[in-house]
Length: 509
Ligand SMILES: [Ca+2]
Ligand SMILES: [Ca+2]
Ligand SMILES: [Zn+2]
Ligand SMILES: [Zn+2]
Image (cartoon, rainbow, N blue to C red; front, side, top):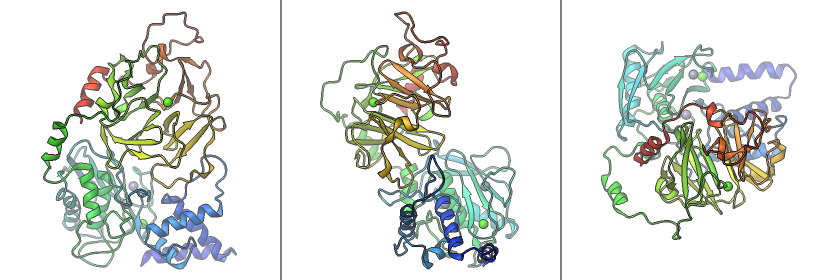
């Protein structure tokens, strides 16, 4: 096969130049482990990995590939790394080893457009293969796909090569990486034009099966650890009687429901009175103008939520929303939270309280939650998502943890001192969030700090939360430094008025 030649031609010049072959192979293996998410680049410092990190990454790869787990770069491991595969990372679901969900379309009727076709197949054969790819998914989930020949489409399929004007992610020539795709709601599906795309034969790469896999990503599925699943990262060749694996079906149905919606479950849910998870008297309604916050969160759809006691409200440019019981918005969630954070990467919302974590998609709790926190300390102070490196940061006392949601994170070097990364931030913050302006905000007591891109507190901070976030009329002389009339919300985009924002979110149940 061509990819083997490519591999060899890459290897040979390296060995001729006098380098030890073992070293070259190790470097290529490292590249693979990094590219597919088994090794994480450190946030700071040089790219020197400890031998135990590499062993651990190899073990994770071997386990996921159903190979003997030696932690060594053995022949079987090298062979597996040479197999043709999808270009996306392998951040498997570590907890359940099942399908992984990366996102979701907020609609079930989607359009698609085929921008160009491969030269290796007659056009009608290629088109039929691509249509069939969508049909695998619409057969088991209540999704409909409509082809459009021009204009905008939700999902756009195209073939490009080593260079592309519209994709920053170049392909690598014949073999190895076959295709890649974006998660919702982006909708790009790209195939490597240098592959020998085929249909109905064991030769080449089957367009229909690879397209079905990439459409799976475009619909929100990540890679599966079942090597027989369509969503497994490695291509297993043409199958004349191809069908979805139960894990693929379970994954797509977790996102969009079953083909025939089960109404009974929904009715039961609405008929049952909401049992308050914590049978205590609600705490008194807080005063947003004087309360120290429990948590702040930039949530889905760019809405900013402030939490205090049993209550939550939104803040926007136009004002402050009404107070809601936390459990009225997020069913099953207690009040008096420690921390809250929304990850745009996975669209998951995490709430922390005591030694437990709750996870929601919008206002629906994920199955299996709440879970016990076991890798980080209980009673966290604050949490935030940093868009720059797509990681979740958890804070407690003078320390923080950096967490990659989609990969195995080694927490043994955490907590690290807050001051080592966030200059000027107080210990024990009461709340923290990244915000629409791309900056990080820390809250403590009645004041807050804003950090620049270098993670330093900006000049003129701390400022007053009540004045600049909560739209309270200052009752005392404003003691914040000059320039204090620049409200944080003044720099962001205008949101819906808060009232209607809450109304629509409630209807999304
Ligand atoms: Ca390729
Ligand atoms: Ca807190
Ligand atoms: Zn993939
Ligand atoms: Zn591309």
